Image (tube, rainbow, N blue to C red; front, side, top):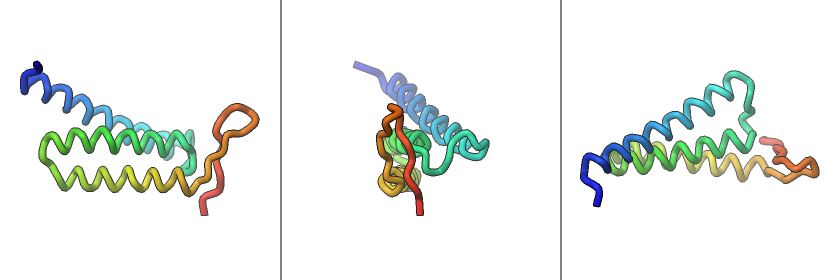
Length: 98
């Protein structure tokens, strides 16, 4: 059985990984490496939101849980809106975002 200290370390690690996902995805977007309708951009945001929701729930920071959950839902909406299709080239292409 894990101690409270060990659990806190794991929860903090999840929070840092979630923040890293957000920062990397935003940095790659601003740097022009990713586009706002790239699947990987949205998936990084969903992953970051999930990890930060777990971390902030554990810390009882419910306003942060809410904002991260909404951020993740927006990313899921972005995935649906972009209409990703698997192309003949064996990779995901992007659809148009209107």
